[in-house]
Length: 428
Ligand code: EPU
Image 1 (tube, rainbow, N blue to C red):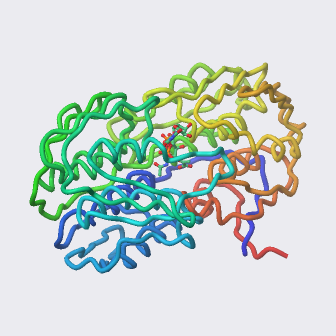
Image 2: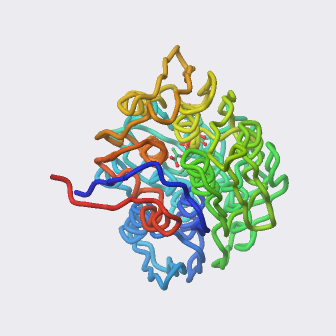
């Protein structure tokens, strides 16, 4: 197993290109199970999670090949409809094969994901949605066993709160259901929009894209799709935040700034200058009259479903605020346990108090943020430790970086190119 070693305190200058979005690639890969034939997906990031999804597709009988960022999946012949515990325990998003398998094979058996480092994360909304389409579900031996009774037929479902993967799962099942399905209080994340584009390319009619009410008219026959994965807004946001923490001026290319509005507003409020063009953002950190970096202002954030501030950037933003010039309040409203990074950030000297779902971050001068050995606990927590390590003086060593490899393509290499002293070394 490897760890990351960062010698902090160096500004980031130059340009980083963002990869395709993990959280779009996963549902779009799962959607290839819906229609027989060869689907072509471009801009697919090569990550631990996308490899896990490809392994799952292979277990179902699909064949695939990768050529750079292009992945072709041939799902002409499906031989299985089961997602085993061994894979689901490494990636909760495996549950995304449920919808397409029900639509294509009429049944599916998927291991129930357990709790995870950021919260309990049940899948009751997914199951409730399938039931509205005529699916019977039961739990047995740690697995969800789902079966279509008769045929899939359109229905109406209203989620208690918007759920990204539940919206995607129900969209995929509804794609082949007879009649219309209405999803109310649907998630509006851009990754859901990317899936809608793919389903439309397959021959499904969907009204309401980018809104919280989606109407799907299923089609009995679907054709294979050719589609590009949208840029990863969380990866882009992580690098903009890293620039704020380390200083310098950083251009982030191959991204869609319109997906980053909530973050950009907060970075500007903190004192960073952010310039946007159609496919890129450039971040400039504030400097004083002698050209020396100035601390950022403290700003508060509350995580919300899209277009609100994303929970997937909360940990990184907290690392940034740990060296601001004031007190920042961070409310986490999506996941109940997404503060695992706090104890690790404190090891670097950050002053953070937790009160229920809120964290109070008291900014400290940069010389008091000092590198230390820390441990990654989940994907975005790991990214926050990289941000803090880049800002801290001295050496930070981050162990268990397999979490990071789930969602960031070649992160150390990309950061090295813009001036960071970061290397991947074997753990002792
Ligand atoms: N929820 C339920 N029941 C359900 C489904 C969700 O109670 O059946 C609750 C969750 O516990 C949570 C809230 O609804 O409190 C919203 O969670 P959501 O279902 O939207 O999360 P998700 O679909 O499981 C996706 C991303 C996460 C991201 C969240 C929120 C993928 C593969 N995962 O998860 O990404 O944090 O949406 O935006 O799309 C990450 O990339 O690091 C990551 C965790």
